[in-house]
Length: 171
Image 1 (cartoon, rainbow, N blue to C red):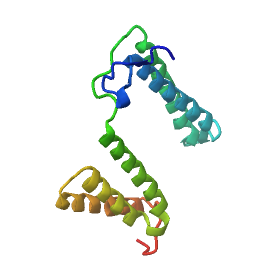
Image 2 (cartoon, helix red, strand yellow):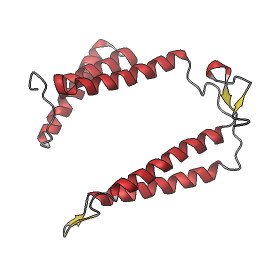
Image 3 (tube, rainbow, N blue to C red):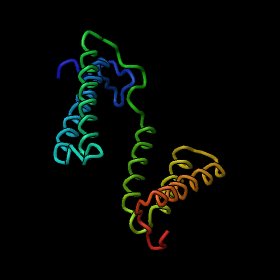
Image 4 (cartoon, rainbow, N blue to C red):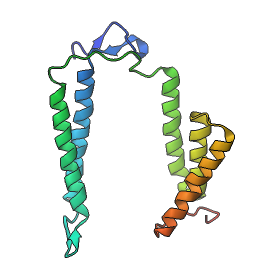
């Protein structure tokens, strides 16, 4: 695509940068628009009307998809006629890419550990990693928020009668 990359190296990784923010916005909002289409398609696969007491499970997701599409079209329309340069530092540097990769790795590991360890222990490890390693929080805060975040949410889910994986310890 001509003009997509400029040779100026403003804020770019590897000396590249996108020439204008409006192109980035258009691509981002177009992806969100496609997600809205997907949500509508999936919502039509389930029951739109429920019973005499209210709408079915497809009602909310259908109208949420319509809203996402409408807002995406509005925002795509707003990108035309604007020529805003990218802000400095728009692209992540090497350290930020490593942090993003660590977060994605932690998410994948938490999905893999959910059944063997159970919800509570998996969330202890996940929250602890996020707070201590990526967030660089002090130990006391990490321990307090990890306990509240994992065991507190597990308690709330159990009060709502949501079945969570118990793992080998059954907690």
